[in-house]
Image (cartoon, rainbow, N blue to C red; front, side, top):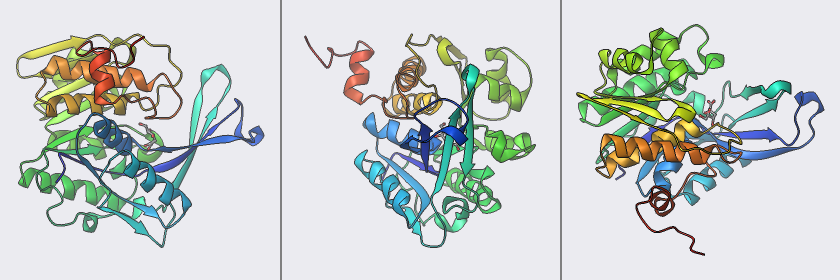
Length: 315
Ligand code: KDG
């Protein structure tokens, strides 16, 4: 039994060791990546039990992904190895003037072949949250059906649905509202970046957008504001929690880190403000290194960084 169930695709990421067009890049560093695995790892590091449903290929990269998740303490007993399709790969490209481009090689991947049949009976037993992103339903028609089936089963089992749209225009094309609004409506907790809230809901300030998101259904809405922290809305309570100042190396993985921290806070019975602060902390840590989740803190580190316990390293 796990407290949180996440489902989605994990990929191997090749990140260039040099800037410039990929045609000239000769060395890369390999990472494990994927929004849902980032959240699962973030939660596990914060002491929460979390399971991940997916498929990987019967290949070296699939083996690497499963090993990485097992090492982090994520329950992969519901992840399958698909002998007929490969594990997805993606590359980053660091262009001049600070632009980062992303190239996916995930069409027809093992995870894109998931469907409702990948949900085993009782997969939500004992869980408090189902973690859903807008990436999975954009992978294929069968993954769209999987996302709706998982949400329906969570509602029937009274498991709360946490939704992060994680808008990937390369995958969604022009179907942003069509695919994502039904999931927003089905969710209990929505965690959105400011720009994606605007793409989904129109113009407005953070608080206006949080209220607009809530009008669609979720009881709790969090707007992730990057360096400015986050704004959370629940019942009559609106909290704005400033971000942690850090020297930013790479922001990828920060939003997922925030989601992991926020949900871990809720699972621990922390208040809306405290959970938002833990989210901000994990998001800030993510920005300090390359690699999506490498710097996510353990619970002990997080408590000490939040000033709740003595520093982990004493000099
Ligand atoms: O949120 C981080 C993710 O964007 C990254 O790990 C890759 O999941 C990914 C995606 O689909 O872009």
